[in-house]
Structure formats: structure tokens, C-alpha cells
Length: 187
Image (cartoon, rainbow, N blue to C red):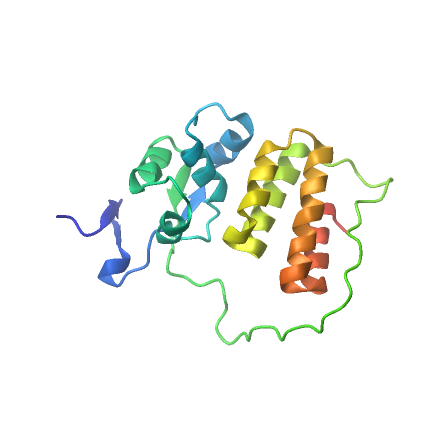
């Protein structure tokens, strides 16, 4: 029995004391999220939606209903995902401390971009919003990620972004929510 999965010259297996594979979408995978042309199976579509270059295969298998290890192989064979080059590398820099908890402040309403702001590009806004939800809310943002996929207009995406920013504020505080708003809408 093979204890690990082989990808090129790498073997990844958490039961061997090595990190689980961390997958990232390829450019084709990002296009597929918009086109919805290749993947018809709901579980695989949800999996592609959640793959963000941060969550491990092990984490996704444990937390997403209906997916199996073969789904990763299928998406990779279609050229929609690829294993990250350094799956064990942490995003936290050595010597950096975790930020102190910010004092709780009353929630301010989430503001949409100013009327004179540059028009939003649907594809770019969708990609940025999906990445932001994944990074800031993780699997807790799964329903928002599905709402992004379902949104057909920029107005619907803006409503999802409003909800995402509110959830980020509730979970991480006003500074994180403001950073999320800037990432989506600019200054």
C-alpha cells in the first residue's frame, strides 16, 4: 500500500510526518470559476472554489462534504489546480508577533465605493473577493464563497462583499474590516 501521494519528485503525506499538499488554482482554474464550463459535479466545483493556496488537502477533505482524494487528482489532470512549491512554508515570518487584540468598537456601516470611483471589473472583483473571504474567514466563509459563485452582477457581488466585510469586522475587528474594504474598493 502506498502511504503517500506522489507529485513530480515530491511525496506529501501527513501520516509520514510531512505536510499535506497545499493546492493553488492555476490561471485555467480561475477562468473555470467564471466560465463554469468544465466541472459539472457540485462537490468538485465547491472544492475548486475553496482551493486558495492556503488550505491543505487534508483540511479540505476533513471539512468539505462530498469530496474525495480523487477529486484533487481530477482537477490537477484538467490543469485547474497545482501543488504549491513550498507547502510546508508558513505565511508567518519568523520573529513577527501576532497582533494584539484590538479594543471592541461599535460597527460602522460598510461603505460602497464612491460614485466617482472607477467602475469595478467583475472578474477581478470576484477573484479578489473570493481570496479575501478564504484568507480572512477560512471555511467559516464557505457560504459567502458560494454566494460569490452564484452572483451574476457586480451589484450582487457588492452585496456579498458587504456581508463579508461585516463578518470580518465581527470576527477580526474594525482594522481588518477596513483593510478588506480597501482591498476590494481601493482607498
